[in-house]
Length: 370
Image 1 (tube, rainbow, N blue to C red):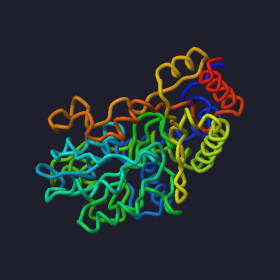
Image 2: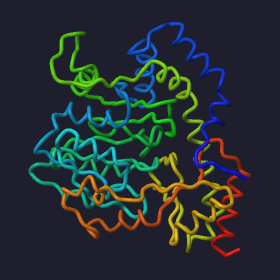
Image 3: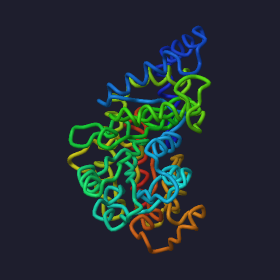
Image 4: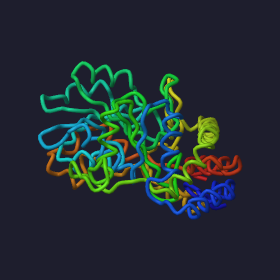
């Protein structure tokens, strides 16, 4: 049996006719940039999340950059975030000239630990960017409380968490703004790059909208130096189709995760499965487990046809690109330890019970030396 880490072909096969029709409609219409599909997707995403504004951009990284720019965060400023996430989170902070400041993560949720944020705040701190890693919501109550106390912006990096909930409220609706990615492997993914900024603040929405169009509100009248970062019509049309299935697919992921949890429970002294906070809806963008001797286990899974992936091998504070920040090994021990032990096993909505059983059985055999 061969099992991919993420299988996108099955999803396309299930909705092929709707996707092809949506693409054909765009081609027949002849509008490819900021047309009716993009505008409709913005409205539908805003309604789905329960926010006032949604602004489509070229990708999730640009969503972060444009949000920071819209909040006038730049040189001399500091932004606190997690060291355990994809590089783009900190990269966006550096791109606007600000300094990423890392606070270690919770060993169970893998999200930024609110108890460690306050000690990182200085007179230069302007914002906190919590990341809902792997689809697990952050402790937004704790983060928002700290932000209000110190008059900081909160920008949610929800790029892996479209549809996740914290205390019954969709993530992406707690902070001043939130950023989403529509990279193909995301829970709501397009067939190319794409991203979105959402907010309830009209000033942020107007600034992001202006920045994505070369700094102009009226065509050819440029008020600031902006970017060319727009979600194209083809991706918007595809995402509109897929948005209708998002909750169903997220529930299928949750069901698959529950099966993994049950089948691997007797290995709890060797393999740590994902922790779920009671107040949240974890939507399992990835299903990551922890164990010692990760590379050996991954190799044996590969030999048996099971794909795996490491998310992430190097914490952000120890990336070569961040050498100038002065961090060293041992500064953020929880994130550093995670990066040595964690890896993902196959997770996607259409994964079958037979595949989950095979993966779980294989892990049992590997662990027991069979």
